[in-house]
Image (tube, rainbow, N blue to C red; front, side, top):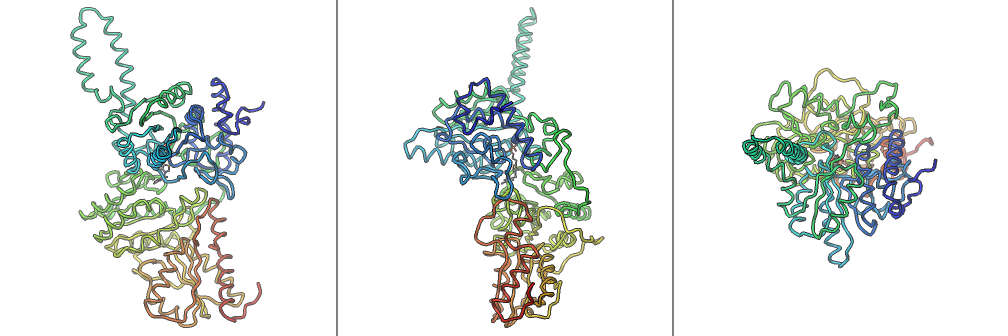
Length: 636
Ligand SMILES: Cc1ncc(C[n+]2csc(CCOP(=O)(O)OP(=O)(O)O)c2C)c(N)n1
């Protein structure tokens, strides 16, 4: 049977359909998402939850003339399916395929790029103000989740929305979930609205019953108004938004297409900012996802019939994030001042396990990286030892807080930077490639990166012994499967290690998980006539002076390797140190991420693209050495 979805090449086609046919389109979208994501992995539950919402928005608003700004964009799959990307949908998040987020370069229907949360309100307000400057009259919509609303940026945007009072629609997609269960007072407030709605229904029911009871009517009425007073804030939903100057409509069932369409029509007629509060279910329409919303947020391939994740038969080494959390837990057993902070990523950082062991000492602050760091700084002033575990890319949000609320005061906060380096299929917004450059800037800060999971556990301990702000970066995914020492040992501050001694005046300074590929490259090169030394630098800051003095000697060829931006990164730090020490006659070659944004793809493919795997490093070293000397090389 031909599918309705196959006839929708753009929202214009959708709008030609009779309303009664939309549920079928919704069903087909869900089937397509389940089919593709079960094979490729990707964001899942949030997408299943916004199918009706997406259809209703594109049905009511004349996109692309009217502009819809999606927050984060991880829930834009239904939007992609009806905005001309149906035939590429099977390539989503794949190398050279379409992105898993909104991207202006990809479609005129993607108004604003995202990947990081909480930007939609501000961006849409900017669009609305731009529209007004141009004296145009199209509609502007921001759609964001209750999780995104926990981010300060959303509230800053809302603050100005209520002030400027431009005509725009804010759609709050409330599924009571961030990636994990949503946290915080705002989330609590939204829950109260929902409970209030139930209360309203109950109240109406109760009134009806009371009216049918004769005699006692007066007394019952008194009791009823007491109850009503107590629940007043529940009875008038959305007061918070109304008081901020934004008309509130809701809450509504976000899976009721007719209701959504009518509501958006109504909202469209309003000449000012209006917020429509919609209740959706994460994973809607696929029972395993509905039952396991945390799992369903972002999934790896799974079996559709059972919902079981497809596992490889080989036993895998532990993930870096698990080694980190386990090591932190071990230290916390011995030191009650250690506390952990996550910004809405308890599972992603494995701090959920820490939280189970130490519920009082674990804080999920919501999608609020800036707050997380200042909060950590505050605790550190009281002698606590906070560890903020945040993905490298998301800590960018808190650049000023690292500077102003931690490093200037030299507070001993530990920054555990997960997903450092190439993150993979989430693409340019998610690669953690700038932290070495943006953290080593600050006086008092120490920056480390372990070569493998065993060194990671030692660095977790070391980080708590420096007495200064200290960052440690480690990648997404599994370790190398190295033997784990039984005890965590502190590493001497600012000392790297020579992991391969070579006879030639060629040295590879590698940082973090690039140390092993660099070692492998050197072994390969040794067979081809270049006998290089390999250094596992361990520290981006301070750089090991002794090693620089020893290996950056006249005539030396020095190669730096890092899974991070070359600009300002680890290689820059080695070169700066060489200059500072007045060493001359050294030739440098930097391997890392050049001045480009890295697209999406598998970690392996992207590492290979930038010569960050053993073959790539070997080839680059060979080329560099050959170009800069007449050193004979045996052809490979
Ligand atoms: C600044 C930032 N921090 C963390 C994340 C990771 N993240 C992606 S989606 C998400 C949850 C978003 O929840 P919500 O806005 O309610 O959307 P839902 O998935 O529930 O539809 C989080 C924490 C992010 N994208 N950006």
